[in-house]
Amino acid sequence: MIYVSDVASEKINEILQENIPNAYLRVGVDEGGCSGLSYSLIVDDQQREGDIVVNQGDFNILINSDSLMYIEDLQIDYEESGMIGGFTLNNPNARATCGCGASFRIANYRGKAKKCD
Image 1 (cartoon, rainbow, N blue to C red):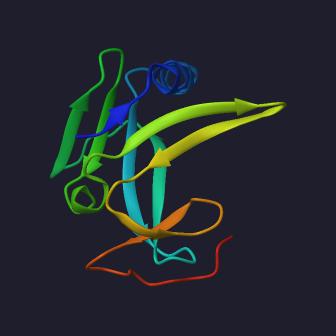
Image 2 (image 1 turned 45 degrees about the horizontal axis):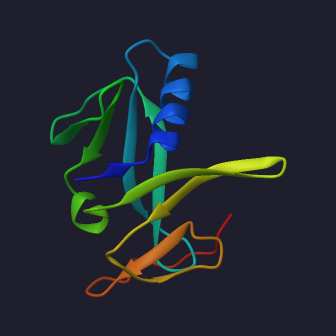
């Protein structure tokens, strides 16, 4: 399960409405980043075989089943500070994270560390 704060839900819904009708938020994990695994949050209009659908009321989240073990119980929030704002991800499975919070590793898998872009 993924948990999304009310503030993040409002922002996600706003982003999805601006893009594609009936779009999904795809949440996943890719190899890379300085800690080995990187989060992926994208707008997608295609549900694929093996996707897990998580209903959030006003929108749905798609999770590739291969990513689920890395982000089980992930908490997504949205914070604004001064003139900037962005999503924050709190992952109880992460055992180490990079300074910017975009990459992580878990206890039993380190991923393939790559230089952050």
